[in-house]
Length: 184
Image (cartoon, rainbow, N blue to C red; front, side, top):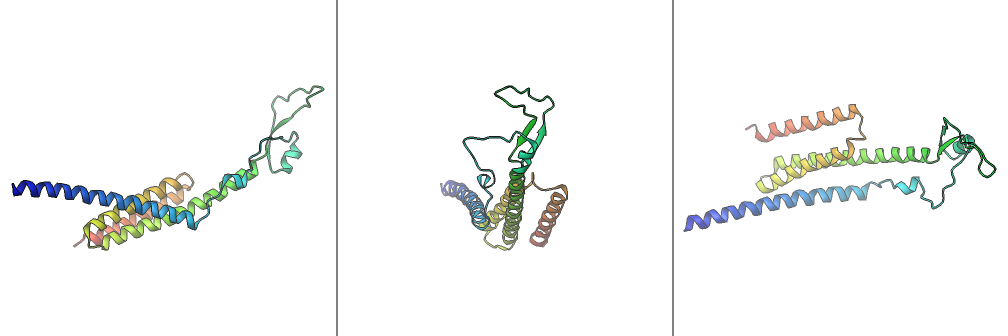
């Protein structure tokens, strides 16, 4: 009878421990991401490209370029009529604004990536030195999740050299941590 009670308590205790670890991992990463959003201002699309109810597109190359647009010549110009002039191309008037937004977005994502990777690595290193097992596990998994979130956010923006450098640094730090923590 006592053995059955102890076994049930151990199973219950393991679930409680696992739940606490998962909760710490989730809350830690919510905290990291919210704190990052307070530190770095995310570029807003509407600050670069103003929404408007009525859009009057420029109908000439000069007018298009004057507003920072990108002019595309028509292969088959539209024939003019008395009520409709001949349009010789198409203007993407948001071209320059979109490039500026994309550049600001890439810069923002890079800052967020570096910060989240730093916090993730700090969590992993701290996990290696914590003596309370449940906290060590939670900080380790919290760090891993932070690295995953950072990589997913930035991966499409990073160039190939940045990706190789990112992976080399992360791998090196993880190997160092494994040797430091488990080479006894």
